[in-house]
Image (cartoon, rainbow, N blue to C red):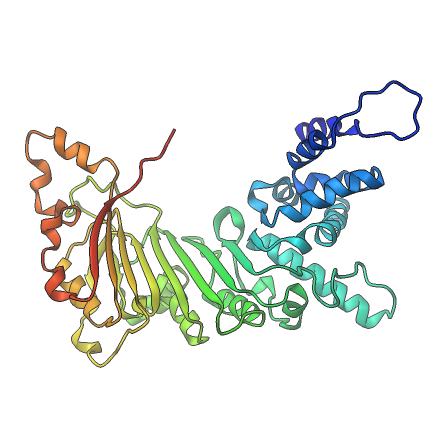
Length: 408
């Protein structure tokens, strides 16, 4: 925090009324510009909203203008992770209470790791308990009666790995606490990373969804991104293995959402250990995903995972997947394109099929003199590899686009 202290030390030069000392006076625009460069957490932590009555105006205006807050890119996250003892925890809780009262109540779009979200939930729960049992003043007063995050409409929760696990031990069973968190969420984004240590479980995920469902409505958009960092992958599994490895399988989390009657707006399935798209498809031990029918129970489906076996169509011929509007394959190989198109035929409202190819694919093809890219393994990156799309999916617009190059 030394850099933050140095940055905040520049703010002591403000307007001083009725002073005989010859001190520099900065224009209001310069002062406000300097304040805008300070993080909201720093403004609250250093008490800069209490410097003077005129200075409070700059601080308050700055806090109200920053309606997006990502804890992962803020000193608050590092401070929480470095909490070692009870004394540190008490200081962090005081800061968290101040941050809720003075800044987070203004935030509309909030991004939190699940461990920090759980901590906030426990603070609110403890606050409600004190109010109910002691009859005295609460540990802090909500900006509006009963609501802590007054303007919150979009919530993004990062789950897994460095953001923390999600099990039953996180204790989201107190559904009354959710009503004191915010009003009604218009959009919920869940970003989950699955790994071999199973720090994220289906049981914990179900309880967490029930908690969030209390502050959602029918029009709430539910977006979920599932990232696979397991060694086993997302290939086909029999019922016994599917139950045994349920905490590491995409389909189990999707079925949990469907069981709770949550309509998925966008579903992204990604492979963190994905091989280079320039490797041959039939390389030994290549990871592929098995396409379950439930993947089509969303509006937008994005696959960044090499697609292998497809669920048989004949066993689901009476099913209709009318929610699916767009399908995207992102820099991934498709082993059985004909089967994939048959898989998509049951999505009668499908309007768009997009294939995203690597940004360097065309340049590599132009430089190759051996004809390597004429190999059938790379047909999914060429238009002639999808020539049967118009006949199989006549109502869908098909396009192949190159991913924009990453600027250094």
